[in-house]
Length: 304
Image 1: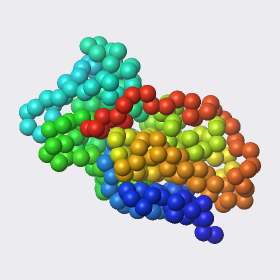
Image 2 (image 1 turned 60 degrees about the horizontal axis):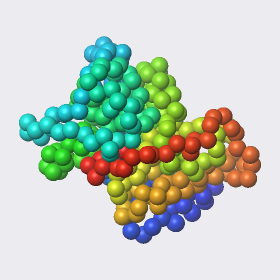
Image 3 (image 1 turned 135 degrees about the vertical axis):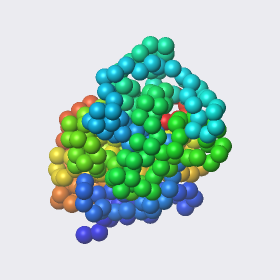
């Protein structure tokens, strides 16, 4: 049986811009993949590999997730000796900013980097674990077409042409490795997935799923860029992964509507494979995933 719902979604994509999609059961061949190896600016989707790197280092005894980290807002560029700050108004999470000058647990920072996509927390975690450790995660998971080469808002590095990149295929590999327990130890993978299930920015993939659908996901955005990747847990069939990347001149809301449509098509495909129809009542197991949305503007240097 051909994936009619997903094929219809791909056929509806705008003719201008770059749009990538991969959908399928975890750890198995996809139902459909479209431009899945095309490179996109990663935005905040790189934060998943970053958190995996932190948990791996904790497992290896190189750091402790409950150790205190000083919350500060000045970071060394990966290019030259320059330093740069972040802009609080471009961050979607006010909580780490409220703790400037204090010490907080590294584990809490990894949580904020995912659940609310905190840029400040992200750079603090990256400063602790190192860029090389994040890149090592990607390579070890077979996601070598993606790269993490700088922190958020490192303008000198961006000017020098250093960009964090991702593909839909690689995003799917990373979150699938969490689901199969191969990204790190099983306990670490389960903890990271629990954070992704508690995601508070849900205006992408979850907006296309029935209310109450469980999805462990992470989005990323900046002007012209909007992505989302996650593991969907339906009651009617096997868990499946959805990875969507969009790079275009579309406005933010239009890009979010495309991502939500991808989620809806993936859900319809899973129902069809289970012999059910879209009109059947969905399983309900959590609050409406669209109850919270992004609240801050995105930085042109890579917020979100």
